Image 1 (cartoon, one colour):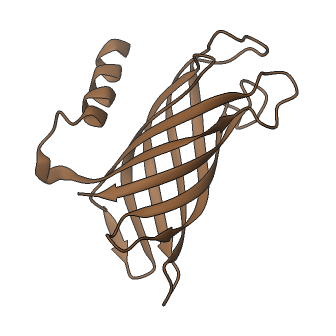
Image 2 (cartoon, one colour):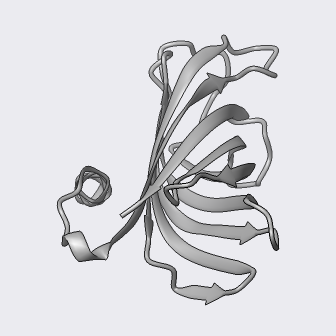
Length: 165
């Protein structure tokens, strides 16, 4: 069953779906464990897929998301959840946030224990570009089932590029 869920998430992220169903892709690069006293800092990457919005109002839209987050110490998170976007009126600025649940693989630097099921939260700010794509910076956190930062207590700062389709 776990293999099937992983295949479904990866398939969605790699584009094995109807072209009409895609709304936007996100690519992020940044650093992981920058504030952690135990784990080693690492370069991090992020791939996200956001569906067409299931809720849309002038000042808020919400979409389903699939996310894959990884770093150079071989930590991997694959999850699904909800993404929210709130633009500011008469400006090209916005706030974005997401919450996801998914599977986690502990990497090569085992400074802390980690559960295999984690929650990922993200909050960011950014600006709309001329071609309807967006550039943002976000703070992402992986939380355990008690919603604490202890196991694994990973955070990442990401520079994100979002492109609609």
